[in-house]
Length: 520
Image (cartoon, rainbow, N blue to C red):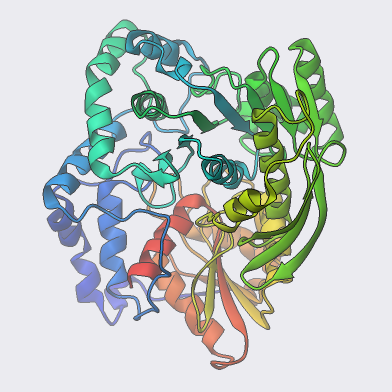
C-alpha cells in the first residue's frame, strides 16, 4: 500500500495551502454543511472541486449536449442559487429521517395538493431507479406528453433533481419555485415537531413546479424505501419496482423481503405494478401487496422482458418484449445488461400508463420507441468522460450495483489493465463493493469525496488491503490527486495499450470526479 506525501510535503504545497481562501473567494460562504447536512455537493464543496480541477492535467473537452447543468454564468443568479442551497443545507439531510409522511402531507395541504394535478408513475427499488426514470421520461416525451421528472441524488448540481420536458429546470426557475413555497414551508415548520427535511422541501418544490408547468405526467423516484418516503403522497397509476437488494439495511430491513415490504408502500389501489426481476422472497412480498391493493401486475421474464441484446458501438442493440408485442432494433446508448433490463421495465411502465395490456394489446409505435431510447443519457452510469486513457464513471455504491457495473465494463470495454478509483460513504457495505470490483481492477486508488459521510481513506484502505492485497492498493486522500494517480498508473502501459480508469463507490464521488475531469 502506498500513500502520497502530506500536503505540506507536496511540490505544489502553496496551491493547496490557499484552498480555504479559494473557497471563500469563490462562494462567499463560510464552509461546508455540518454532519446532518444533505448528501449533495454544496456551494462551498463545489468551489473546492472547481479549484482542484485547475491543478489536474488538461483533459479532452466534454462531449456535446451534456445532460448535467453547470453553475449559472450570471453572477446574480448563481448567488441566488447558492443562497437557496445554503438555506436547504440547514435542514435535516437525506440520511437523517423520521419515518413519516406527516410533514410532507401538511405541506401538500397548505399548497393546495399540487401532486393531484397530474397522473404519476412512481419508481422504487434498490438499483436502476434513476436510469429507468430517465428512460420513462424519454418515452413519454417522444409521444408528445409534457413530463416532470423528480430523481435523487443529483450528480453535480441540485437543479438536476427537478426536470421539465426532459431537461433540468434552470437555476432561475429553481430559485423562484423555492421562494414561492418558502412561506408555506415555514408555516408547516412552525406547526410540526420537526422542521421539514431537505428532501421533503425539494419534494414539495418538485410537485409544485409540475403543477405550475403544468405537466401531463410526473415520473417520480423515491428517495428511500417507499411507504414513508416523502414522495409517497402521490397515487401513482403505475408503480415500478426495480431490482431489490441489500442497501440502507439500518432503515429498511436486513433481508430482501423486509426491504420489499417498505418499498411495496408505493403500490396503490387499482394501480398497475411493473416488477423487475426480484429475489424470490422480495417478489412474494410485492405480489402479496399487489393482491391486497387489487393492483394489476406485470413481471419481467413473464409478461415482458429482454428478448435479445448485442453490444454495439456506443451502447447496445436490443429486442424487447413489451406488454403489447415485440420491439426490434432498439438502440440504447448505455452499457451493461442491467441497462437493457431497465429499458424493458421502462417500456412496460409506459405501455401500462397508456393502457396497453389492460385495455388493449397493440404495441406502441416502433419508430417512436426507437427514437426515444436512442436519446437516453444517464450521467454517472458507466459514462465515458475522457479518452487516452479512457476514464469511466459509475455511481455503484452497493455490492449489487458494483457487480452490474463490473459485468458492464467487462462486456463493453476491452481494457487490458483497469485502475479503480473508489470513494465510498461510511455507512455502506464497502467490503462487498470492493469484492465485486476486485476481479477487474489491476490496482485500486482509495480516496474520499468532500462530504461528511465520506469514509476515511485510511479506513477504506484497510478494507481494500484485505480484499486486494497491499501491493495493489494506493491511498490518495484528495480526489483530484486520486484521479491523477490513477491516470498515471493507467498510462504506464503506453498510449495504445488499452488501459482505463473506473471511478466509483458513490454518486457524490462520481459527481465530483465528473466536474474535475470535464472542467480540467
